[in-house]
Image (cartoon, rainbow, N blue to C red; front, side):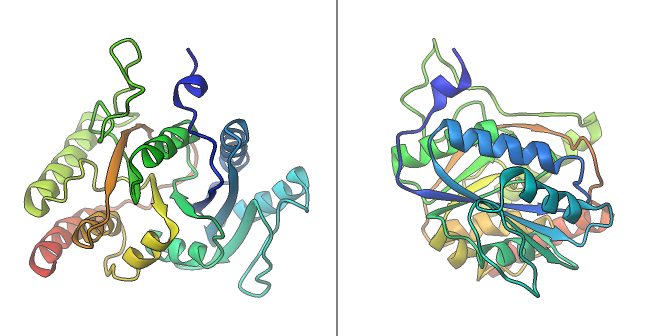
Length: 278
């Protein structure tokens, strides 16, 4: 049985805004946009996409403008800090010196949906999991649904899953053993110290209620990879409900990652800061 038949969410009047932070994603952008559009269209869901580009030198912005021609000007628009024009479906916003947090803040200024999905544009996050996020949110009226690489089943459990129809376990592909150990160790360390009840604190594939994301992000102080962890810790502290859906994470195919040694050190410092400050 196909993923579509197994995971299709209930018909919904809600609108879903996808924020895509990009940096050097010219090769990935046309395909990921097509996949996201296909997922929402096949599930008959209302949607829009907000691209927040970090002044990519590889021509990502030019590709985004070409997508306007492919999808049609009635559905796709390009906006910038000089021309903040708003149109549905695909928005392009060029900023400089962007971290994940500031990219989401910029994107939120243009979201018109009831829910916001944040994901990467490098195929590490596949849009095929979006219906599962929405299905879990609908089943339990959750405030946040986050993808996890480190669980085998959704939390809370979805009634549609059974021994005859098991969920796909979470996992990581394309990483060497060292990187897998570092990632698992970092999440175990953070979960033990902070106890947020979320298995994948460093993941960035998530669904939020719009007002919840705005509230939580307004209180976050961290940058870089610590930002995602602080989002979950603060959401729990504010009493928001969080569910988890297993996802398969695939290392980026094209482009460059911003991960560096400073981020690893910053993560450890961030855990301590959250432990003493929240």
